Image (cartoon, rainbow, N blue to C red; front, side, top):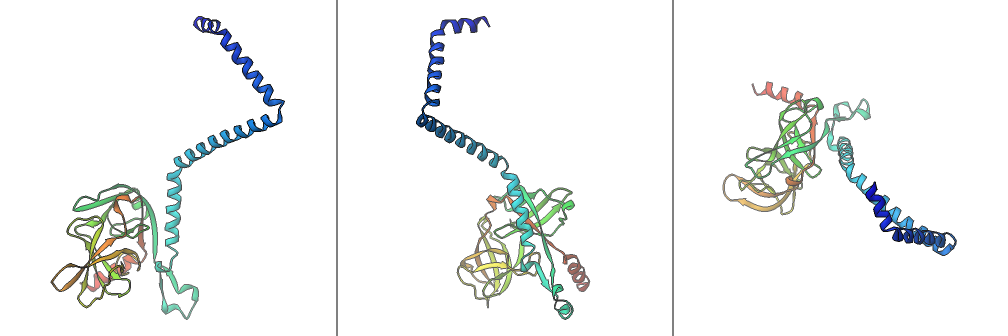
Amino acid sequence: MRNLLAFITKYNAFFLFLIFEVSALLIYIKYNSFQKATFINSQNQVTGSMFAQVSELKSYLHLKDVNDSLAAENAKLRGMVKSSFYVDTAEKHKVVDTVYKQQYTYVVARVINNSTNQSNNYITINRGSRDGIGKDMGVISGDGVVGMIAAVSDHYSVIKSLLHSKSQFSAMLSKDKSVGSFLWGTDLNPHKGLLSLQNDAKPVMGETVITSGYSLFPTGIPFGKITNLHAKEGGLLLNVEVGLSVDFAKLQYVYVVVNKYAPEQTGVEAVETK
């Protein structure tokens, strides 16, 4: 306290000048309309700029909540598209509204761990059995096919990525409609895959490769586009190179595909193969 008083006493002339200067400036602004308007305008600009920066900071801090909300909304919308329903033609003569029945629903999940540089890559998500997720369910993103659920706990699941040496899915040419098998390339490139087709198929450069609807996914989910018509020569199959539509290094949210009729189909097929 003594040091503070000594400091004020030493520089009292400066503080007195500062008080008079501020007082004069306030009186000048108060009794001159032009200067007053200019001051208020400047003050509003500074205040507005500060509020804008605070708002941007708040928006950034709430970005995760916004992303979660948008991802959940996208999952809901995906469940409303035509490919998520099947047509029960046997009931057409009864009630038209029952012709289209929900077959696929989607559970949104956030990626919390991911690898892309291994020969067998996996992705961990923050949803598990308590959210209705089970083993062998398909997983997609907003851009295309991601993989298949390999393991599930109460709150977490592990996805066997499309970037896995043993990943294989039923796929189809979007134009030619030829069906084949989609797998990851042998060169471990996280941006490319291979589509194996019968030799009578007629793929073209740039054609989109999509899910066939025969397995885990509804029809029409993209794998990517054809970038090379002769990835491998010889053999009974035609192998074409596909540029993947999903950038696995940037995955943040995924959608687990819940096929409501998968257990029934699996049960019937198991009996048939005995």
